[in-house]
Image (cartoon, rainbow, N blue to C red):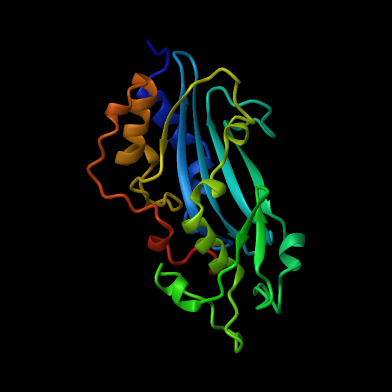
Length: 239
């Protein structure tokens, strides 16, 4: 039986700054392409690892951002109950090798390496449009593919390459804490203003707390429609 309660988990989510400041699918400085929530728990410890992949328009990398929250986070950079780590899938230096203009893919570029796998670069606009990916047309007379659109296309085609692996997910967790569930779809809401609800008021996090305490994935029974897909957050990366 768990020594922590659903109420304690929700109170922690409400009082720390993780949800307010970091786990934002519509971050103006990040073109989100994929997202996942990872739940770890045993009878004494619990942890939530939020992850989102995409292109950082300030960092200049194709990357995964991992936000850690729980009662067993290791090697924190501060006294907070959360921490953030970055996994660089393609660095800015690597992207510069295929760049033409500003954050555009050269028409001559044919391959890009991610996690040691060579992926083909698609230049056909129609392939992107069929996925709902809007190519940036600003100052783009040559109709080159922009880095954000390329990232979203490659994530759609190769999602596992754009999700954190076991080592990356556990870099701030005890080695022996079990991974009990991974959520690829959920109903997401922003909690960044005083008028917005706290995580404890949201169905998604109430259910997450229930699953962490029970360790029973059958307790994940959402009623709200999943909306965490990047297409539902059009302002991502637009600052």
